[in-house]
Image 1 (cartoon, helix red, strand yellow):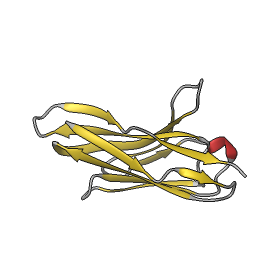
Image 2: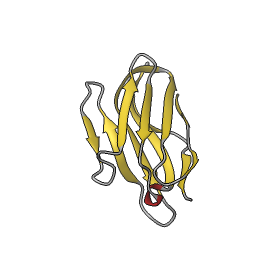
Image 3: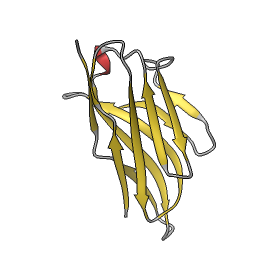
Image 4: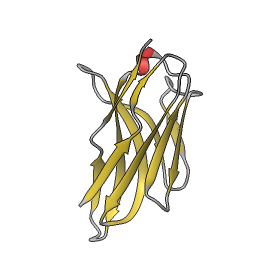
Length: 120
């Protein structure tokens, strides 16, 4: 079993910042890609940013230059620093991780989601 626990969401004014964290725990042998996605009601979940274990990073065009993904591989944790937030960034943010478990099975795990609201 693998669990992902997110934290750091909340309410912020336009132009403000938030930092999301997501920690993976359980029977983990290694983790490949870790990423952040977001979803608003009535729309599909969309990619925000991903990071491979080797440091290759990908961002959605809508967040480039404002969001920064990073990870601490020693703690199986991924972060999302969000700066210059806009109302259109309002969504539930989910982290995911491509995990190789201790029993050598591969699972794609998702966190429970954390609400980010950007509003004045």
